[in-house]
Amino acid sequence: FTVIDAYFDHQERWMAAEDTKAAIFDIAKQLGFTQQSFDECISNQAVFTGLENEMKRGAAFGVQATPTFFINGKKAQTPGALSLEELDKEIEPLL
Image (cartoon, rainbow, N blue to C red; front, top):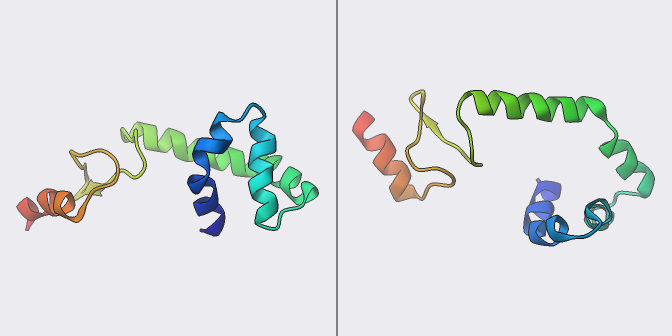
């Protein structure tokens, strides 16, 4: 989770960078990656294939935002992160 949090925390910076790969590596270095371990990670085709499969699976369910909540098998009406009040509004009618 530390790695994921770091990339989300600095998302605006690395997504807007002229050299995205270098910007991503700058963050990876702070997390203990070497150039070699970083290159091995980003060239791991099995990981990319797995991510692509999950994206396709999510698209089949109509997922367009992260997070997307499914409650009792139905996609929540409110996209993205839900507050406790919004989540309660989705669940209460089912109780």
